[in-house]
Image (cartoon, rainbow, N blue to C red):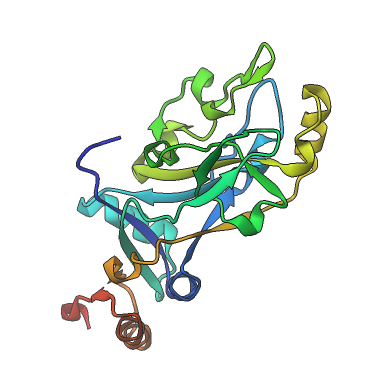
Length: 246
């Protein structure tokens, strides 16, 4: 991870911004629902795209890069860009029950522990990943079976070059459904493919809200500019608006 990486940007819409601020959480989507249909797919084992979750961000301040993101990831009259410090998620204690006996930490909130077991009890800089763009099939569509092990940490790190304009950084959370724990490798694949979890919500650190900065889309309409300013006043966050375009 880059040492100078301090802030990341997320392109979305005002309604989603309000939900983030109200809930103090960020939605992670299952890789099966991402725009690249190879996301989370392995050549030799299926179903992990159901239980690997992702939140997509970017770090591209160029005029071309920002125009691409405004055009492709926001709605014309409601778009906003959220800028946050990159180390933004709350850590929760997790103690393994036959999987990992020692106590560790995870960004997965405890409310999900009855359904999902965190597979990555790891430090922050492995949760955050810079996407590598390549057309190498070994990386975009890898094999994950290695003897008795399933190397699912290979998944979610690469995208094909058609997506390279995104310059994506992503937070990845790999989980195992709790009912899968005692299944063998052959029956696990069947069970994984039956999992139907589209999204999970990951808690922000309590102190992160005042550090959020929001920029209005160049095409944000007047009513939504007023709404955005009200949100800024309510949550005491910085709102950037270019009044020259009004």
